[in-house]
Length: 348
Length: 193
Image 1 (cartoon, one colour):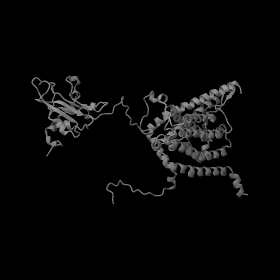
Image 2 (tube, one colour):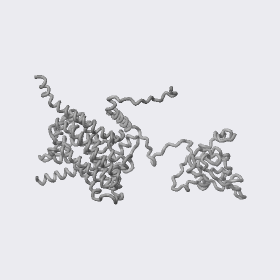
Image 3 (cartoon, rainbow over the protein chains, first blue to last red):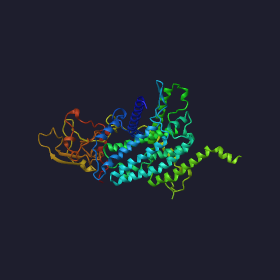
Image 4 (cartoon, each protein chain N blue to C red):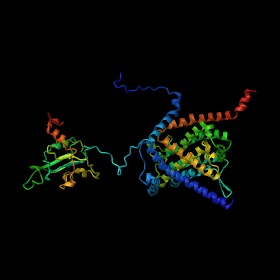
C-alpha cells in the first residue's frame, strides 16, 4: 500500500463520484427533455442554450427552499433517511469496471475502484440497504401517506429482489465468477451475456425498473394515490437528496445492466481498428458510457410510455410470474451446462 | 340494431391469447409509438420570440371609432348592448351641449361606455348591430390585469386616440361587403319577427 497507490485510488474515487453526480444531475434534465419530446413538446429551453443550465437552476432552487421538519416527526431519523438513501446510491459505483486498465509509465492503472471478488454480492447488499433510507424517511415523517409509500417501497423491493437474485444466479452459473471485472473480461468481443441469458436479462431488466422505483413500478411515490409517497413531508435539499438518489440509482443500474449483459466496456471488432492499449481503454470507457446512456434513455422511454401498475398487479407479476420464470431459467441454464452429462445418461 | 355510421365497435371481454397475456408485444408497439413521437415536429410555440399566426379577421379588444373630423361616432343608441349575448356592454347616454360639435358627431352621445372584458365573448355581434360604424373589434389582445375591476374597460381605453398615427386600422373589418350587408337589417340573426 504505497502513497502513489492511495493517491491514484483517491483520484479515481473522486472522478467516479463526480461523474456519477454529474450524470445524475443531467438525468433530471434529460428526463424532462425526453418526456417533452415524447409528448411533442420542447421541454426546458430557457436556462442557457437548449436549457442545459436547467439542472443548475433546479439545484440552486432546491438549496434556497425553506427547510420544513414536521414537529410530529422523529428529527434524527428524518435526517438520516435521505442521507442513507443517497449514501447507498453512491456506494454502488465502486465495483463497476469503468474501462480496461490504463498503462501510464509502465504501471497499470485499473479503472475499477476495487475489484472485490464478491462484487455481485456487494452490489446486491448495498442496493438492498437503499430501501432502509426510504423506510426510515417514510416512518420518521409521521404521515400516513409517507408510511404507505415506505411500506410499498420495502415490500416491492423485497419481492423483486428475489427474482433479480435468481436471474443473477443463472448468470453467475454461466460465468462462474462473482467478480465484475472477470464477468466483463469474459464478454470479450461479441460474447455478450445477453446472447447466453436472454430470459435472465429480461427478468433482470424488469426487476431493475422495480428496484429503482421507476415507472411503471413507481408505486412508492405515485402522486395520484399517495400525494408524494415516502417524501411527502420532505422539502428543500432533503427532498432533493431523495430525488437525486433515484437518478443515481438509475445510472448505476444502467451501468450494471451494461456490465452484466452487454459486455461492459467491450465492443465487437474494435480491436481491428485500434491496437494501442491506452486508446482501447479510453474507447472502452466511451463504449460503456454510451451503453449506460442508452439504458438511461430506455428507462425514461419506458416511463413515458407505460402506465403505472396497480399494486396487486405488481405483486402478481413479481411473485407469480417473475420468480417462477427465473427459477425455470435457472433450471434451463443448469440443464444446458450439464447437457453432455445428461445426454450421457441416455446414450451409453 | 344496425349502426348508422359503421364506426361503432363490438366490444367483447374475450379470453386473452398467450401473446396478449405476455404483454411484451403490446409494450414494444407502444414504445415504438412514443419513439415515433420523439422525432415528430413539436407543437410548441416559443411565445415571446414567436407568436401564433392570427386570423386576418381576428376579433380582439374593441375600439370606439371617431369620424374623419375626430368626433366620436357613437350615439349611445344601445343596440350593441341589446345585441350582446353576454351582457357585457353598459352605457349612459347624454345630450350634446352647444360647442361640443367637434367632440360628438350627433346630438346624443355616450357619457360612459363600459365593456366588461371578462364577460365579453368576442362574438362581434356589437359590431354587427352598430348602425353608426362606431364599435369595432380589432386585432389587439386584451392585456392581462390583476383585478376583476380593471377588466371593465371605460371610454378612456375604448375610444380611439385623436392622434392619427395612434388610431387603430379596422379596414379589414370595415369592408364594403360588411357595409352592404349591414344595409339589409333583415339578415341580422337577432331580428325579432
